[in-house]
Image 1 (cartoon, rainbow, N blue to C red):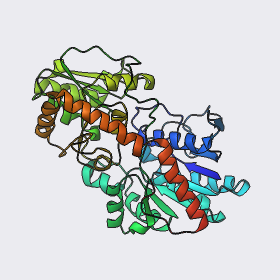
Image 2 (cartoon, rainbow, N blue to C red):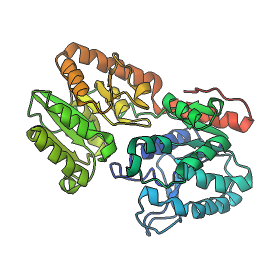
Image 3 (tube, rainbow, N blue to C red):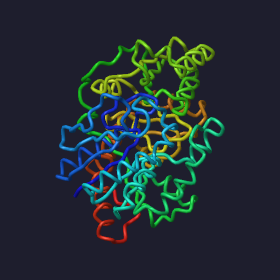
Length: 405
């Protein structure tokens, strides 16, 4: 099968941890890799953001990344890319006139817009994964939401007009239904994790030495919505415990980051500055060892479209303490692989953390159950199974089940 992946801002070649480089990059890279391994011809189309990038870059597994000229060949914030999507779509239409893919899989709403423009003249079916929805972002960020005002209307149109929506969690199906996208138009295919890289084995990779009896770890992009401030506030009521935050700029520049400075000020006011360490960007090779060095991994955003960090923690056999939002409700089995707590509630985080830190046997039980849950539901092979099934059934014109992975 010839598959076109369209990911306008999230290249599989990008270094993780930047403001606009995170879970979507991982999803596109790993799904592409697994589909190529199965013999599919996969091309990822992403925006050229540096002038000296080659037009095409082969990936190790056999897929190809093609850099699309759309807007200036330099860094543009994700929310500033909207005016360049017609040019992106026109490039796709020209490219696909020469070599037509069997199916297009669009990632994020702007990719969906460009994909529809490129695919419609050639009758190519487009499958849409939103990764995040504008309605949810607007609800939680309010006036701080920098998305173009057209976003929600375009997402609604894409959901109704594409061949199929692949939602990453059941919460998204409900949100789409409220937008007028019928559940019969949606299949749930979650994100995944590399279980060979993230595993409960020996501590490979570098991890800072402990300074206190217990360690909490939070990791991901260093942006306010990830809720690190909630973890810092909770730490004041978790004695004998340090909090490590991994993500953002390199370690030698992390203290210059606006969010890092905010967290440092908050830690000072909460009286925990000596127990909070901001590590900055961590080499992916070191992440499993860092995760395994923690007693608990905290994932405390006020909203989370899916969230790959809980899967990475569970794959390493480490319990997860997460907010009861979005994709966490699917991935974290409350009372089995970790705990779910209300968002924006540092007291609830602290109470759950104290209980888990006091019970080594419970943490080991949760960790083992987390590893088993990931192996059963969240390997990239399972994700690719679900996506591949949807591709084939769309091409065959069949009715699709609402859950395929």
